[in-house]
Image 1 (cartoon, rainbow, N blue to C red):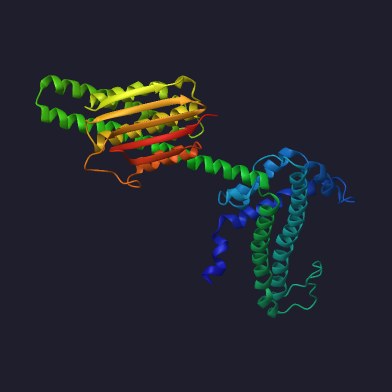
Image 2 (image 1 turned 45 degrees about the horizontal axis):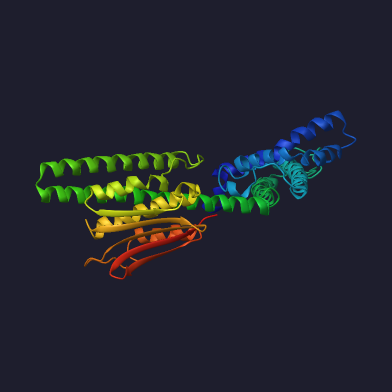
Length: 384
């Protein structure tokens, strides 16, 4: 019984009924003007539905009156972009009008029938109701009073469910809109993944430098070295805070495009940070790095940052060789350092996996692992 009565306590039951009633205002006005041509409102809906903006208005109404903020993805809130969408809108307007006529008739006559049955049960003769003409009143008619009320309840719920299902079919997104929504969702997921990588690379690099510098300063016991270590920690932390502020800004303003990300032209900052942390970095740059396209240059910077972070994290202050080569429509990044006892496995940790994923997204390749007594990270990226 509770499940049967549950629709009575749902707001959508009444907003759907109101949604069906709205077109009847126009129909009622027209019938007051000229009741001999009841087909005119239906004819007017044809050119009206062909207007692209009408589809948007109907979609917004369906969202808030048929679904009440739930299941919005089932309704299109964009103007018609094709003739197929326009004719679907016309059909929806006609269906909505027919549903409104049925709903209006039922919500008027069923309560009237219940009232007349109650009147017949109390001794009144019913002559003006074409559905229940009663010339012989009797108390037994009281037993029939609940039937039209139950019919009204069932009709309101059923019509609401039917019009919602038809709206989802006729006002639903077109295949092109569904594809665009899927692409937008994919871009959002890729952006979140990229932000997670950036946080890992930037903050991980800063924390690694801070830990290495602090440990080296404590072990050295030299005030001058400690000052240099604190300076390196300060510079690295400031750069990490700038990156963090930028990434958080992207999260706060999802519609704003990512900008001002560091590129390979700022690689000297990474090299100096690694040197300040105790690593001996020898860098070799070949070719016009400043001409590398923005997306490749930005991802290359992050790949180099993660590679140097791995050197500091796993090998400490060992000599490292960095090679950046830009020629023959390809960008090659290579970081090598002597192997130590702790060798990260090929699939261990998110840093190396992130390097390979970045390279794959750009159509390139990445190899990480031991090579001729060194640990090597080598990334080969095509230049469009």
